[in-house]
Length: 379
Image (cartoon, rainbow, N blue to C red; front, side):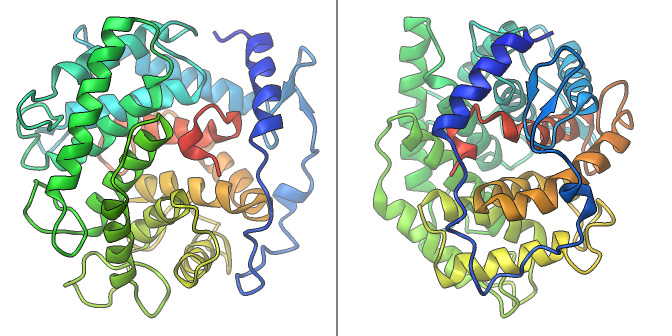
């Protein structure tokens, strides 16, 4: 179990430097409903049974759910450090290991500190072992023909944990892998500015946002990321806008808005520092309305499927957009997650039918955003 004293000390320190501002709250964006009793009735200061300060909207049940989820992931890590999830017999070990690793470090664990330090360390070693020294791609084989997904999530995880690594030899290896990974992403970008399941094979929204967030994490870790690659990717999202304000599947897929991809695009747009452009405000309006207004908050399931995936990104967007959005979204989503825990096994969430490792990693990341441990999730 994590030391609550250590956790609180870090929380208070991060609170001073990671305050979420309200300046992104547009007059044109939909205002959160005033009758959100779930959020309004919650006290700003919450203490656990020992008198320790908890993050806003946290309670004992939230902490218990996080600990149960962490324990589930730890139990299901294989001896080589990987996490295996299957869907129709297909496994995506690099993707699952990266997502589980992000869940561990979102809770304050590093490769040398925290109750799950050994799990983080083993995950890093496994991911590094899957990096192709020639191409720079990070994937376990072909990962069922979708190598850019694991590459993007692996880059996100390695870049996020890079500054926490105290072993000089491992850190040097991480540096080499991340630098080659950045080059691979740049060379794999399509002429339109997006990415597809495999390098140099086209473009679509979900792979594009995965690479964008990976590049932002690498930038946060101090690596040089080509500005023109980022600019082309944002232009690609701009080209994929729909009249509703969201993002479609790909440039050539018509005007059918994809809610999960729209949610995923938002934190990527924000990662460039763009909070007030027409695209950012329109997308936020569409996603917030779809998740939180007009009774859409009543169910975890949203129109379009891929609900854990969508919430994973939407939660980041609302957290960065400002307290009004977060205060409306999180208490309801939190309670829905707590009710669903256990569907994938003891302490686990069975996300989107992909499996319990995927669902648990996504749920834990959402629940632990208020800890403010990772720069990639902050404004």
